[in-house]
Amino acid sequence: MSNKVIICGYGWLGGYLANALETRSLIATTRDKTKARTIQENGITPVLYTLGDDSAALASHFHRATLVLNIPPGRKKPELSEFTQQMKALIDKAVKAQITHIVFISTTSVYGDANNGVIDETSTPQPETASAVAHVAIEQHLLFHATHNHCKVNIVRLAGLTGPDRHPINSLRGKTLQAGNKPVNLVHVHDVVAALTSMIAQVPTQKVFHLCSLSHPKRGEYYTHAAHQRNVEAPEFSDTELPLHGKQIDASQSWQALGITPEYAHPNQMI
Image (cartoon, rainbow, N blue to C red; front, side, top):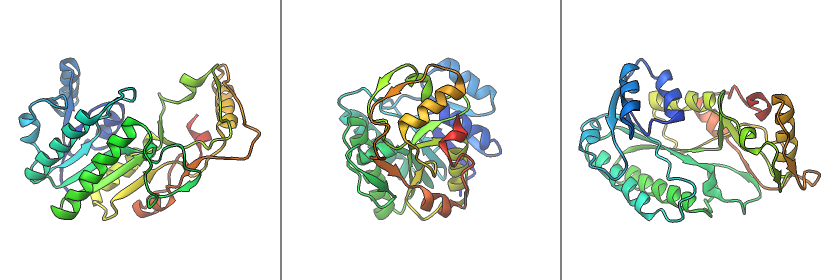
């Protein structure tokens, strides 16, 4: 356990995490000078950093720190080899500087959409998008360091992330969509933060974690209900009446390993 935590990629999730870690020495990266001033006003040491830039200023904080690596690649980019190489290079520099612990924020999209049924932490990734391929490559690079360089590593595969100010219905309302019988895989930011703070404090030996709710209603049923609850136009889904079909992210073992019962165990609690 390190008392110094670096949040590399201080975005929406990073803000929630920083609030929960306020008793620790915090460093956070941002690409925006205005945001850097806000970060500093909140008692956090800001580092202006864009992936691919000179990382000397950031690297000066690596020694004996915990690094939460949360830099998204951008969903719509068709080619991410440069992003992947830059992330690997940053990880290499952190390991060389004797980082204590790396927590990588990954995604359950590494399993693709071809999978059907229950997916647990031992399931083999089947990435289908450029982003998923990049995440798998970065995960494998981290696991190499964990094995060969004795670096403590935790990979956190997040389901769809929701929170008090973020929910998928906001972008789905009024749309006509397919596959209403696919399972919903969501996780609330408060449960994610509880898991991350536990990992930072205890550094579990388990390498790969799933963070997802414990229930998986059909998309067509759930988002119709969510729209009614929020008083917005409901999306229309095809195939909702068909049997449930698609990947269900099983996070039960991960929650158990962390000693956490998710507060938002059912997606209905996230609306």
